Image (cartoon, rainbow, N blue to C red; front, side, top):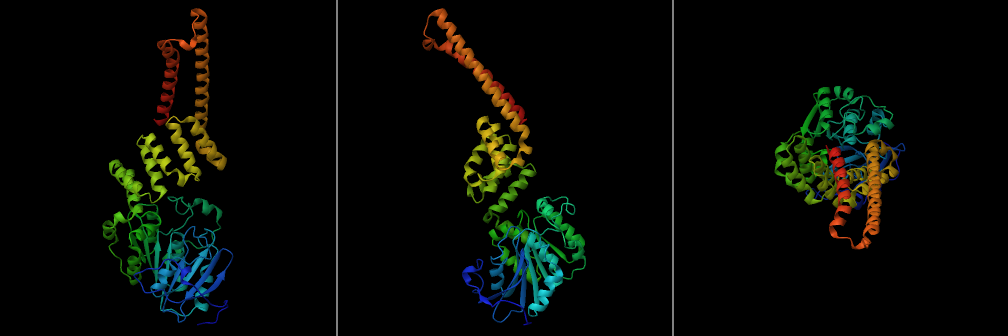
Length: 435
């Protein structure tokens, strides 16, 4: 091994490693070295006392911001006979603070020579796996739901990471330019019914060495659903050998194992207008109670079907899990408003706005209308109460009767008629808003 500037090697206890694969051999004894750090991005090298002939270079995915945690798929790869060079970060910057030249220099000068080099990552890490592959001599890239870019000017069909892009300074060359000169085989696993498809097809246009592996209804990132179906290990092994499996057929057989798959299929059915199938699938996912996002999406689906009461009831059942989310507080306020719970709706709107003032821009008109409606309701109630008091007083004077002993018919006429008019006004307003 080439000489390197490193701290003393440390044995990594197995308890600190990621979940291992019980179908693979026991975890090997490993030593780890910290090879690089710039304050945001760090590199950790995990090897055996006698290095392997295979190296996997992995990249932390979006929001995996613990630079001291095990590397992406670290245990998974060690069990499969790879040494691992794990790139980690504490910000979502798509590794813009690391150049291809820096990583190439580290691999060529501070690691032993490897017969096989593979890069592996998901979403943001998938982008990096493709971007850095040639610089370090990788023959194979396995990228799960990668982005060509997170810049909306380059990928105008996808604004999921626009806020991150606005905060970033871009130093990398365009990935399309990198792919045009790449000699590695890039396997891109993606959901063809998600925005990831746009990225995948732009990658394919840039290089004949890009191999698309569709994984329908896996959403983003695709690896989560594939792991729920227990298909990810076999898929990785196949792609590492250069074989592309019939993933669609395997997924259809295991669809019931993944709530994420059923959820994405339900959303696709709803988008195509297959509301009966969508409702059935949403119910299946809801009954599993696996994740709140599915229950929220089902609530939105019910609202689109004009079932505001059912949508609110469903959201209320999920509420303890999502009560911290400002957008959910505002959505609940909207449902409360549509179902006539005006005071609760106004309180919910005010809570959301107090936590995130910018949200007022999205709900300003509705909140103003709601406030005016409540004020009108209270004003009309005051008028009704005042009229009732005057009528009771006049009856007392004219009849000498105790107003508390008025007959039932008189009370119904005095109280019921104004309330009926008020109720009709509220129903008309709500119907107008739903329309």
